[in-house]
Image (cartoon, rainbow, N blue to C red; front, side, top):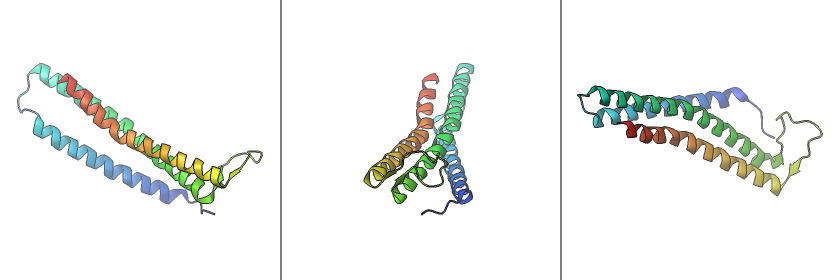
Length: 137
């Protein structure tokens, strides 16, 4: 069975989110500083502000999605390794029917796949916000 230890997993997730978030902010600001012109008219400045706000909001919305996706992938890996749904220690009622073997492995792979889709969509959300923000410039 898998040893249940939450604090190292949370710490790894937090450090990963901070590193990727910081890198995303840094590279986005570098790219925006290269493509923007030094002088703005008032309308251009307002469009730039709207685009930046959309970028910031989508980045803030994407980071929890990445964290949730990582957790869902972790749950899927527990299901796959133990070949049991629900995995031990998840807090389900004792009357819950247990799925074992190949069916549980299929559920584990499916849950890991859904977690991966959630991580990718959380990482792509700022890109979509940036592209949508460029419509205002």
